[in-house]
Image 1 (tube, rainbow, N blue to C red):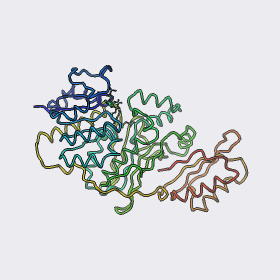
Image 2: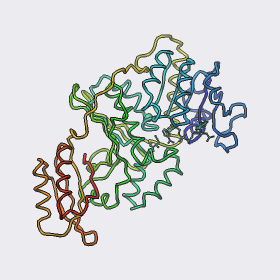
Image 3: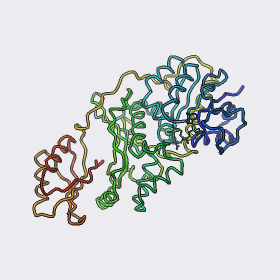
Image 4: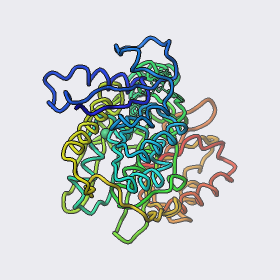
Length: 428
Ligand SMILES: NC(=O)C1=CN([C@@H]2O[C@H](COP(=O)(O)OP(=O)(O)OC[C@H]3O[C@@H](n4cnc5c(N)ncnc54)[C@H](OP(=O)(O)O)[C@@H]3O)[C@@H](O)[C@H]2O)C=CC1
Ligand SMILES: N[C@@H](CC=O)C(=O)O
Ligand code: NA
């Protein structure tokens, strides 16, 4: 008897997964034991990129998760509800679940994994972070003996695609976003991509795996890319940086609180993450004793994501075939405690800031004095251009405590010579 799949969703990822399963020649032989038994969609009238018999498709998704014949539920519908309820129902009914839904996992992991553990089934989520890149299983298994210090990732394909095209072509933000949506990279509501929320969900999942505790999503500092301008991309390039939306989780010592954050960042051109362009993602993991290891590949799109979803399905087929009642501790989630997260004011980082000032003598000196008052030391300060009547001054600091930098800025804002501070970005 084959293993029966109930797939929830037949959009970009669902279609890619069905295509892969229907074309099994030359792939792992276990794929041939999988039957696409039911597929749940919203509309039966939509044209589909795959052929499925009419009795397979249904709009009644509850009937799939309640069907005793279904062995594995594959949730690729996205969104919070009804995805959450359907996952919980499937697990309570003793079905293993594969999901690509980072939004649901980042918010509801406590109840989802508790339910899975109670039912003795597994939740697999390789597609939820880094699309096709294997990163969840490596963190759970191959790297699990390491003490992780830092996980730094470009984990949102849409924003990396937008920033890359803004940089290489000087393109307009909205035109490039429309292309990312057409190519199937963006979320149904691209706000999640552009405002950094998708990357926040993903770094919460990676941090939880890397640092062995639950992450409260509200504690993840999140800034998107809307405020990144062509002017800053050009200045960054002149200074030897590229601008990337980075998701970072870091712990200095095993007993110190975690820093977990998402923000556009100036990355030195020689850094391994600087050359990750387009829809590609990369996750740099630093730990002891391994040192640095970087995972790189396509972070979104039908085929790449289907590769991750289907490899999870295959792992579960292998579990079902071995028919053991003992839970594999490398596949379950045992985290109960929440990680302590450090406030952003305590972060030690470099900053890039762009100021528009009245072109008066002594402005640079006044800026330097305000920074000096709060122990902010400057790596460089340049006045390169004008915006109309206003002089443009760009500053890069040395490492500074974020709280001190913010205090200096508050004082600078009160200087009569300062017209505005259009950009403020962290530097890796
Ligand atoms: N696109 C990508 O590159 C990646 C996506 N993901 C994640 O994968 C998941 C799916 O994404 P994607 O394939 O892009 O999404 P799509 O919007 O392309 O597809 C969603 C599918 O789910 C169905 N669906 C959604 N809501 C309901 C509902 N309430 N009832 C019945 N059917 C429903 C839709 O039905 P219908 O077709 O009838 O409208 C559609 O088939 C998301 O969690 C996403 O974050 C993860 C990695 C990469
Ligand atoms: N919208 C996401 C899809 C994959 O998770 C992205 O752009 O990375
Ligand atoms: Na992945």
